[in-house]
Image (tube, rainbow, N blue to C red):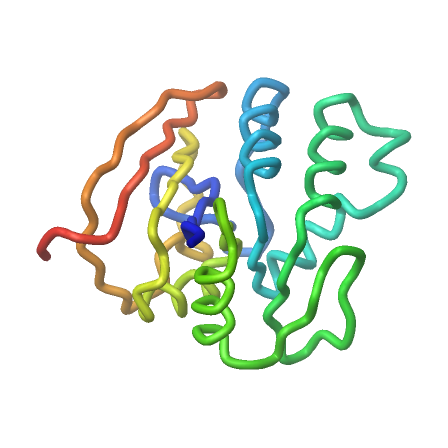
Length: 187
């Protein structure tokens, strides 16, 4: 049985994008990028919401093998090798190594969790919110960047109430602190 993990870079004030909808956080430099490369390689399946998938499609580009530095090439390879399930009601097609799902998110996630070994990553706050409400997320990883965005899309979906228990912290490059939590405890 797989572990479903929701992991995103976030500002100190809890936003994964700025008010414009763009990812306004600093770009990971080599050491932090390597951490994310390792995370991607450990991912058995990536579950993506439409907006996050469209952002990450950047890594499907063949130019990533030519113009990028080695750490970016490594991430692009890991991204392309990881099977992806994209939940969208508006997309008509998805790229290589990805499947489009228009059905019930909860049912698909439960089935994948039961039939997969390793980690299943969740990308996108709206998708993560749906899975959190269904009790399907096993671990929350907040990569807190020392920046304040002042607004935008929050890591936790509005109206979602969760009790979490700490699993640990880790200091990473660029002043990023990884905060790990599991569901549980009391509000």
